[in-house]
Image (tube, rainbow, N blue to C red; front, top):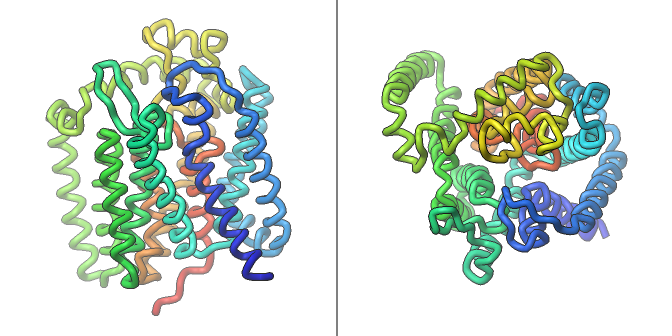
Length: 411
């Protein structure tokens, strides 16, 4: 009986990770519509599924209430940011949206709490590998057998793979995380490592087929970061000179990129405006300075022509539903207060991640730093920093709590 319950719990966890990844449901229910298409579809099934996830997660947390409380006490700044999102209904420009989004944010954060308190980092990575393995297989099936759903056509007549997601950038972003999960497991594991390297290779293949230039760049940086984090384990007499050398090279590279932006952007298939993002950001900043401290409430800004976003739509000449930058999105929602709380918590978690890596010897323990690095990079061009029902945010909650446990014992 215990084995059956354990299997059921693992199946629930993997299924929930799949749902939070944003895969399958939306692209099917919308009939293969793109991310920016205005298509009406019945989302009642999605609401039912999320409600079941919330209920089961709460039950599992209560059943292990002592461990839940122990982990809960480790993330004050994290919970303060979530609480700020909830109470922003008091000043929100769209209270009903804030209420709905903050409720989802709280529940998806609770799953992050469950994920961290129930599983070790090694177990978390293995469960994520199962999740991404399913996504990879289904993405190939959708793109090859069901191109209406799996292929995205653009204005130039070209076609990019989007797999089980609504947009090619969604597939690209998830494949960055997938690549690093399989890479870390394959790097550490000797048994059946060929299977893990296969998952890593297929993740990169899907990333290339999605033609998501920013995701490809993020992957390259996170792989380099993985090896850079290993240096942190070296003896001080070797570590410090090496880190100084890396910092010098990085600074030189930064100045070169700053002086040759067109060359860099063209190499990843982007123009200097990052597909219109740099033209959008000044308009967003203008709106941020109208309500700089507390913002417009969580989810209260982007309400189409009926909300404050109408100004941006009118001036920009197109209809974005987010600012394509996680930090600006957070400022719009919760102002400079929310952004400051996030950065303070992120910095503390990042430093704790370094202490965790320094005190361990396995590749698994580098995962928290890798995911936080990915968040910092992807938030420069995407808006899923504080997104409810999002795998990225849920995993941030999980790794933030995981690195605040007792440091791993050296073996």
